[in-house]
Length: 85
Image (cartoon, rainbow, N blue to C red; front, side, top):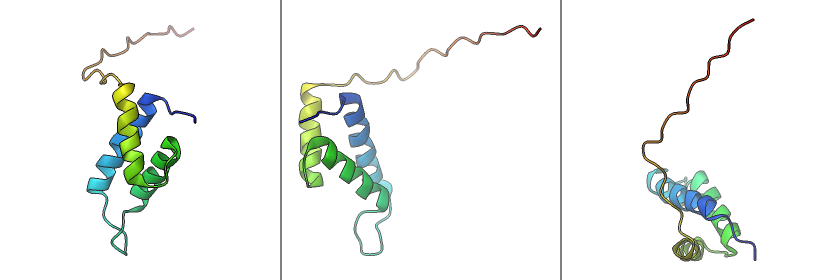
């Protein structure tokens, strides 16, 4: 089975968790469209068919292949001036 890059999997997991908390439910009381899309992508990425299994699989994969936390205050890129002709 193909395995997603840990950074991609971390991003999907984080976005799913955040979206599931803040996105309003659909008309039937189910998850909203973005949450459904992320659940589907997590399932495909982890080779599962249920989002609960996908979340567990993603967490297991990330436990064995951790992703370093992003630098909270990265140094800005230097600005290079170009002389006009």
